[in-house]
Amino acid sequence: MRTDVKATADGTLLAEAAAGAVVVIEGSHYFPPDSLVIGTLQPSATPYVCPWKGAAEYFDVTTPRHTLRDAAWTYPAPKHSAIEQVGHDFTGYVAFDTRQVHVG
Image (cartoon, rainbow, N blue to C red; front, side, top):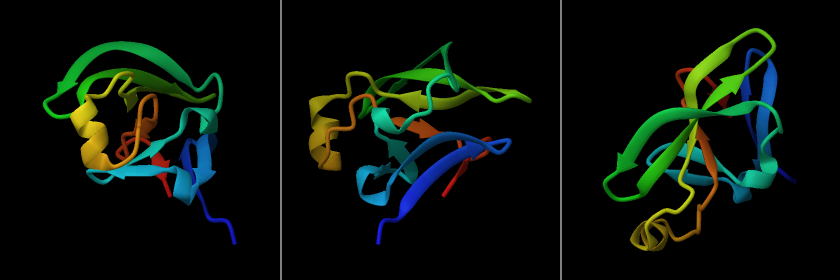
């Protein structure tokens, strides 16, 4: 039986993937790039660098009702040591701020 993990906001589907394809890092669920719904993420100018994962890129999440600022992020080129520590290449995977987006 396949179990899916979904990310939604305002009833809008943002991402959906099989549980085995989602990588959990520090409590955040990172969805593979091919599980994202096109058009729901817009690049944000917010900078951030994680000491152990590297430089992140943020996204605003857009739904028909709202724009949720910096509600998603990715590591386009995570540090090799982070990939080794996680045990999975999470390059380009996207996580969501669970204060703004429901993940489950």
